[in-house]
Amino acid sequence: MVEQSKIPIDTRLLFQPLDDKLIELLKSLEPEDWNKQTIAKDWKVKDVASHLLDGNIRTLSIQRDRYFNETPPQIQKFQDLVGWLNQLNADWVKVTKRISPLVLILLLEATGELTSEYFASLDPWDTAIFPVDWAGESESYNWMHTAREYTEKWHHQQQIRDATRREGIMTEKFFYPVMNTFFQALPHTFRDTEAETGTIIKSTITSSAGGTWFLYKTPNAWLLTSNPKQEPAASVEIPIEISWKLFSKSLRPDDVSKQITIEGDKRLGRKVLDMVSVMA
Image (cartoon, rainbow, N blue to C red; front, side, top):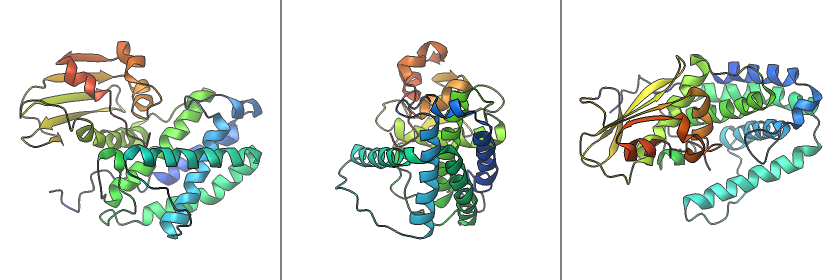
C-alpha cells in the first residue's frame, strides 16, 4: 500500500505554468494557423482550443460547483460512455465556431487561472469526482484524477504545437508526468494477457524527458513495479515524438510499428502498443 504522504504523480502545480504556455502559444498564432489541421482528424487548431475552453468550463461547473444539469443516456459499457462524451465534445466545437480567436483567448485566460486554482486546491487522497476509466479504475484518488486532467490539457496543447510547427512542450517537467500517467493504464491493457507469474515487460520512452516502466505479472494480475527482480521477457522502445500520439489514439500500432523496437517476446511487446490512455 502506498503511503499517503507520497503522492505517486503530483501534477497540481503544473496546471498554471502549462496554461501560461498555452496562452503564449495562442497569442503567437497567425490568422492562417487557426485553420490548420491537427492530428485529431476532425479538428482544426481553433477546434482544439475550443475543446480546451470546454474543459475549463466543465471543470469549474461540474467539479468545482457540483452543477449537474445534463442527464447522460443509459451507459451499459465503456464505449457507450465514450460515444456520449464524443458527442458532447462535437456539439461544443460546432457551437463555438462562431467565436473569434481573440474572444477564445480571452475566455481561456478568464477560466484558466480559476481552473488551475481548483486543481491545486484538491486533497490528493480524497476520492475523485470521476474515476479514471481508461486505467480500469471504478474509483480513483484525486491525485490520479488530476493527473488525468493534466494529460488532457498537455496533449491538446501539443496537438496545436504540432499542427503549427511551434516548439513542443516535450521537457521533463511537462512531458514526463504525462507519460507516467499514461502508463498507469498498462496493467489494465494487459488484464486478459496470459503469461507466467514473474514475467517482466520493459517499456522505454526515448530521450531524457521520457522514462522506463516495468510491468510485472503476479499470480492474479499485472502490476507496475519500479524494482523488477529478473530480466524482462520483452523490451519495447518508443520514440518520444510518437509516444503521446500513440497512447492518445491519434496514431495506431500499425502506423508506427516500423519506428518502434521490440526485443524478446513479440506478442507481449506488441501489446504495449495497444495502450490507450484517453477516453476514446
